[in-house]
Figure 1 (cartoon, rainbow, N blue to C red):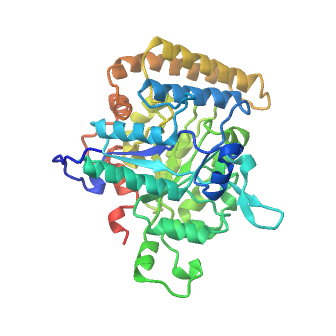
Figure 2: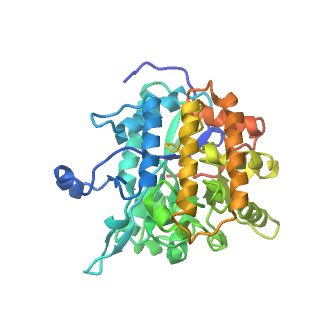
Figure 3: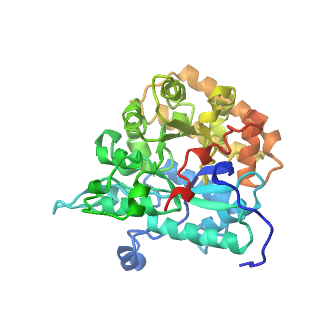
Length: 443
């Protein structure tokens, strides 16, 4: 580790340029791995249920992600896999090298829970795709920030979005740690990964996120002033909206991520960030982005005081480029939008081999939707138009992104070229600093 100091000044939280949507990837312990089973039971902090042949489509998608990481100089082990430590090393180097991004928010992922035969809520391994515990990620964020300081890069910073399932037996204790953790700037939920509909969340969950809970809600007879203060701070909710193809549960229970009505959460006082703005991933998906924009109008009207925002992570993925182009023209909404990449989901890359692989993937998805899942009903004419538009946008973007190697900078360059500019106070790159919980306010 380089301990030589460099003259980089730290930025105020509200002025930082954020990528507020970066997943933690890589291969951790496997629940069915004999040689790791004892360690796994003792320290359940990192788990990845490798798709193998459970889902051919997701397996192919994971292969593409790993291939992209390896081609961008991420280290691989003897089995050709990118481990979690290697992935975080990759993210660290790319942030340090980035000219466009100052801070990254890494996302934790809690497991689904269910009642066991004794009536206790335990991890539902059958439906668990990924587990990145809050403790594991907070320790990693501490390490990465310490490393940045030692490398003299105090202008860069890592944060985290915690994840907590409401049915955990230790829910209140886990939430207490989250509230007091200065690394935590938000809470992230993918309902399909929790195997739980939003309507099944207890009201206390929203009360805590809205900053309206008291120490009595935590079943405490008394508390110190620090905890009482931190309870009043809002913890923004990053809620996955729209289709989910990175995890099997998202494909098995897509209805859990299709939120027709988010007003219940907004009325509870939660500061809500709709991840992906409900946008479709593939042309065959239903697109909820127009509904999201309408809800933005309602939320920020004179009659309401709701705090609704959206992140445009994953919008430089090849199949969403035409949606990015459309959204960029909606300049009045830019002040409510936050920047993110959705890494390790690929950011657009140029090159004919890459384009051809992605085109084949789209056709495979079309076949999967229309042939193997006839119960889905879509307007195929609009699907073809959207598909053609996505392909056209790939050729347009190739000239804009081909020379930019840094994945974060390439994502910004594409968005900027479409009209997401950074020459005004309310721009997507710094907006997150006014929406996420400021660590300086946490006592």
